[in-house]
Image (cartoon, rainbow, N blue to C red; front, side, top):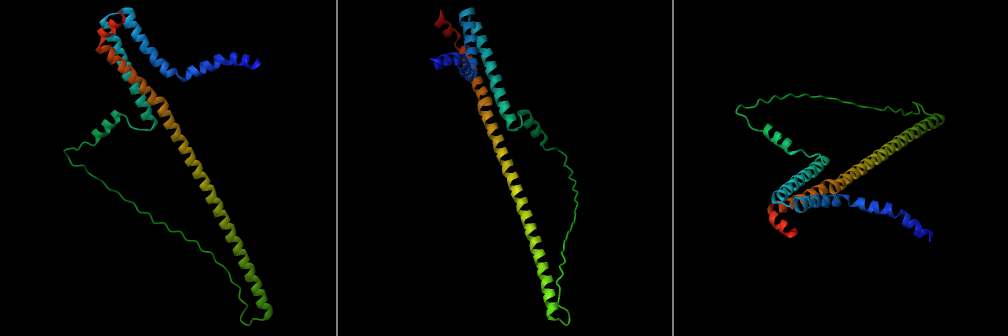
Length: 217
């Protein structure tokens, strides 16, 4: 019983959210119904029907233009005037254009060298000098191996970090593209569809006003 009461209490909130999801189609239909009601039931004259249809056509063209403009801006495309301006700038002139060329060259060289000392046993080596030289060389090899391993580990860590950053950047770019496509499909294109509906209704009202009036008289 308590669950039913809670359901009834929260029903207005859910119903309002359900209606808000269809606010654009409802607004579209409301504008059309207002135009029909004002022209067919209030004034009931042919000029009023034609003027209402003309207003609907203007609203439809404006809504479609705004939707197309928003979609164009979202994807960074130039406007019609910008395209015309860019085309006019490329118009060939009567005088030949002077082309000036300038060049610069830069030569940079960098070199790095590492000197390693290899210890010998001497001119008249003995067993002790050979062992001492072998220990010193072995210690040098150990140091080289440690340095090479450290450099390799640092390179691997840097490569992994760079790879993670690239993967994160690509995921963010994909997310932004998905948001743009979703916004274009839910905002700009839907607004253009609203404009098409208003334009179609306006054309019908302006074309056959007498026939529409005969339906309500």
